[in-house]
Image (cartoon, rainbow, N blue to C red; front, side, top):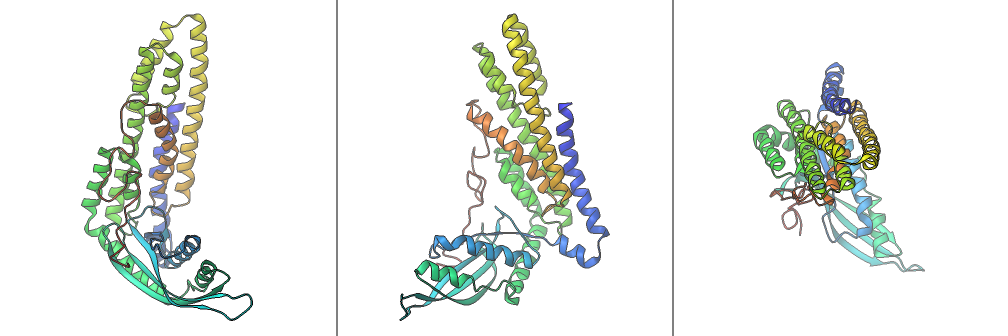
Length: 364
């Protein structure tokens, strides 16, 4: 029964992709284009001159700007929408109490944050008044009109560049993701693969296929780490620690037969009382594993039915659930090294997040 859950998860991934494509094909032409052109942008504030208290509000504004131009606002995309600010005037009002009055030039940018290539930009001026400099700044941001046609023109120009990037460099994108998987940077690989927009149809299909391969590689890695930890525990006849490790063996992992054999070996070497305790733990752990994998399958199914932002979000949702098992298994000290942070690529940090290179290029 347990094995059905992971089979269901992978089936849900493929069904989600087919469902999204079928829905797009059946929709009117205008709606179909709106759906397929949902290129991903990460709204992020990188200018240190903008007060920290204003970051969230500014990111919300950029999220709205992206959405109104038919883009998805998501985390960890190499393509970003960001902003820098220049204070044009700074005054103290003669009122009681005195107030800070700012005129701020907000410079918005869309581009490849990893390579630092700017695609488009747009500048507006806003005024704000507040009891403190930060409040004056925040009040100025409230005057940003996300319906300004200049924002749509900026994002539309950026979208064309992003689509051209995927169509031109698809082979390199797939190759980079495969290299990340080889380095056990699964989260970064999935982010790259599921970031390919549906409008780039050939590259999108290839990325979807590769994302399932990365997903299974992650599961196999977890399997081997958990098995290694269980074998080390049983070498010292620590049945409890072995049971703890075996609960992280995925039911579709490459080493599941070895794990099943180890369970049987342990059971035959225990006395009657120990065997009873062992069997109780195994039933408990198997129930927990079944429940976890059922949640994983449901997560994939639910995100797939919603269509996702890139059609690949079903894979990401399922992997997010698997992340807990990976983290727990590694924290136990299996000795295998590994993990999404085992090493880093040139474009991603050890946490799997892109390293943006825009300061000094787009703004000071």
